[in-house]
Image 1 (tube, rainbow, N blue to C red):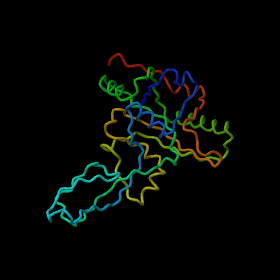
Image 2 (tube, rainbow, N blue to C red):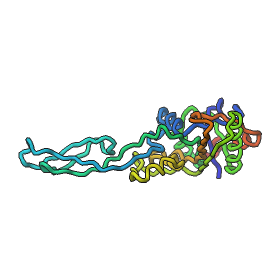
Image 3 (cartoon, one colour):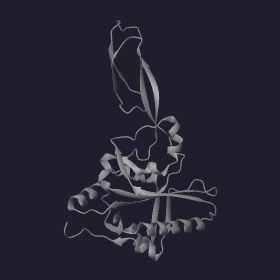
Image 4 (spheres, rainbow, N blue to C red):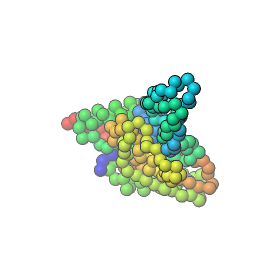
Amino acid sequence: MHLIRGWESRFSPGTTGGLRLSQARRFRAIEEEEGIGDEHEGAIRVARQASVSIGQEGSFGLPVNLHVALPGVDESDMMLEGVMPGETRELTQRLAVNDSQLASPYLLCFSREPETAEAWESLCTALPQRYDTWTVTDDLDALRFEVECGIKRWLMQHSITEHEIHRAQGWVTYSYESVPPALEPGEVLEQAMQIQRWFRKGRKYQYQQEYRLAWSIRSPQMEPFPEVMDIELTKTGLSLFKPWVQPIEF
């Protein structure tokens, strides 16, 4: 499997001698600011029931069509048709959970190597225009090993001797139209702690064709961890980012 990644040349591994890993929440904010990110990426939403009713006074005993806006409801202006005076209707609220106090994993992101000119054009449109150099990686096992060596070296440099590292990797799925589906209340805590929630985006971002490696790091000796982690790579690690150029046959 060949995965490519775009860089500003001044930040490429060959220039810096390492990698800057950003936490998923910061990564999401940067992409959103540039107009290429999903503001709901990694979001946790919970479903709960709400009641809406119309009083008797001034209704003349006739059914009415009622516009209602509830906090967190997907449809900002919902229409309830044929509501009778004194009737109560049940609605499902889908509320965003504030997870700002939870650490998000560090990400390293790639895209599928395009095989056609159309795929290359779609990818360029879906990613930042500031990228002026590209690399290709074809040995993910070696890359993961080298990055984790760099992370552990960073931890040692910061005198962190007690830590847990949880990893995940795989393709990002583009599974929802606008916002992630809401969970039942009992599912929220478990999902909030899952790295996998950062591997989902809306369908409009599918042309990014993204593959991610993610590391969640915890230690009683550092709380919170910084939003960015600059790690050094060995010569072997740097060699895993080979130069990539658009094929002539495109």
